[in-house]
Image 1 (cartoon, rainbow over the protein chains, first blue to last red):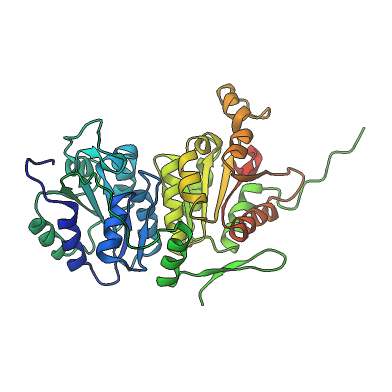
Image 2: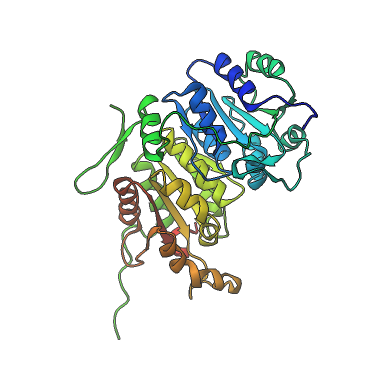
Length: 209
Length: 175
């Protein structure tokens, strides 16, 4: 829920960096969601979105399916969620135990300059619950977020934490180049994803080194 | 009068598609069904080595597929051609921009063989739109076995590091 006095994205990111589970994989949406996370906690296991608004959540779902033994954390915005709300239903149906969704609810399209949302006051946790995600909570403070991150998430389907946040319109300068292909290869190398081994006349396979 | 062409060895073409996917090690299938794809998805769901995710929208399916491929699973998508028309932004700004190799098996509705009239507008624009968004594709050849055509499409996707769409006729995919 959007509250009168809201923490900043940086406040929550500091908690996330401090409480990041071991072996976590982090997917961040476009704009400051990626830029600030790269500035706060750059790691090869981060997958930064450059654009593709609304698609961080479904990509993270696919990643959680493919990497079921590693915690997957995705940071998505409320505006981006509204573009693909059906993804909540898919997450509810797949119910991956290892997926934690952090929804930044700042009430605006921050990444494109702060334009108004179609509806800025939705109860996104209730929306997630009605989509089949039982563990969905509105969070108003970094302390409450720290508590939620410390409580563990094993074995009960995906978790959604809606973080009430002050809009951050000013663009953060990322400390690294967020080249998409480099981001992908760095990430896949870090998790030991199998590589495609070609065969001269077809029939190549994915194989681990 | 010419003799009718002999039936190809994989005369049940949907079975040959599934067998090829299993042989090539596909571990994830992301899908939005249509009338031709429904039974194929039921069969995929019964395969212990392929995890099926049923998405609510084709652009969402595309992003899920990018995620499973990012996580190391060879990934196939099953969607209708109309679904590809509605995933253009994700295609160029995610799948192509990040160079995700994805095999897209696409039911080609709205061709002259498709008796459902309302698909015609989508069939008419499918290939021009694919060309416009830079999506590499091929139509299946009904006179050749389907398995090798699927394998060639899958190989192209991996070796060119991009999505590749194989446009399927009804006899290719409807179980």
